[in-house]
Image (tube, rainbow, N blue to C red; front, side, top):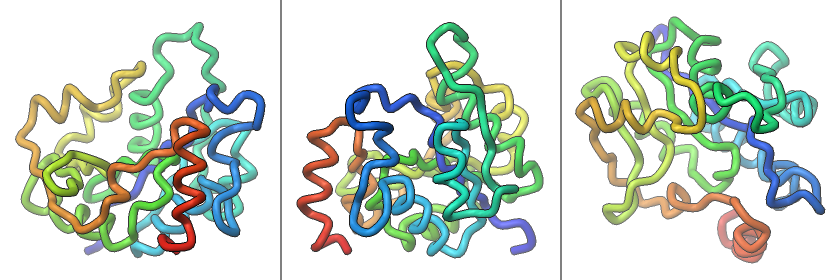
Amino acid sequence: MKNPPVIVVLAAGRGSRYAAQGHKLAQPLGDLSVLGQTVTHAIASGLPVVVVTTERLAAESARWVARRDVVVLPEADGSDSTLGMGYSIATGVAARPDAFGWLVLPGDMPVVRPRTLATVAEALGQNPVVFAQYRGRRGHPVGFGAELFSELVHLQGDEGARRLVARYPSVGVEVDDPGVLVDVDTPEDLAAVQADWPRQA
């Protein structure tokens, strides 16, 4: 495929629940950080990767991908309602406009397997919107076909791409990967993933 789907790793959130410990994506997990594990799994899928982040995590992101593949956004402080997940997706998609499609992967999902990412990407050839699911439960990544470019690049705010998933036919791709449901949103989540990491690794 000349221009394969691109994985857009979303790493521009504030991680405010970790205020006392530093940003959640910079927390250690195995021999890397949470973000490092997410990005290295994305790279291992064989697909191109773009990381959308802020200055706070730009150097951390550049440890795993080339600087040209790190898109730096303003730090969201709640005063600008246009910033948020939707804006992050729009910026990542706009950075690779010629891709066959885009897989949206939150940076705090470090146990999604590379093969899962490749499987969802393969399903984009037949469907405009696809998502990974495990035992019938919807998870990430969510993939969008190239025909949705014009709508994706106009997303803003915190809604993300939910309205696109609702508007267009979306197909769940069943995978044997419980990691599609696991995000590191709280310190308790991180502790659980760290405790299980030897088995995951």
